[in-house]
Image (cartoon, rainbow, N blue to C red):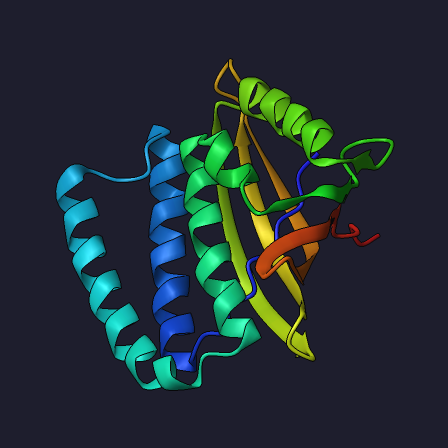
Length: 193
């Protein structure tokens, strides 16, 4: 079904702040089905914007393939949460392949991947993905591989929440001067004995 990777390496102080924020967001989400109130949204938006400005400004001059992909990948997470299929699909190459432990076979081609996620969005009207331990590596100036772990919260139409710990990889290639996803894979983490 789903596999996500958003390869942005964060400084340690942001990771700690993110862990605290994730815990409060997840608790609120499970208890109420809502992510947060509008006042909390505004506060988090301001804090998030300041953090991005402080972290991103020194790196602007040294933007390379990993940073370019991170700029494209970050809004995809919000698009997934919002159910914005067009925005989520925009980065896939026409001949991309999507593989997931939640479906029996790989999904080949942008149109088929779009159909797959369209069904996912219908079956699970609420989705929450909390990525962690993301890492991205660039090879030359035209290939970036991103790996991460995620906790995936899916709420079905009856309001039942299922939780899936996953590991993910996304292969980005610069095709025709544009970064595109050519392969995305997600699998559930094995459960211990």
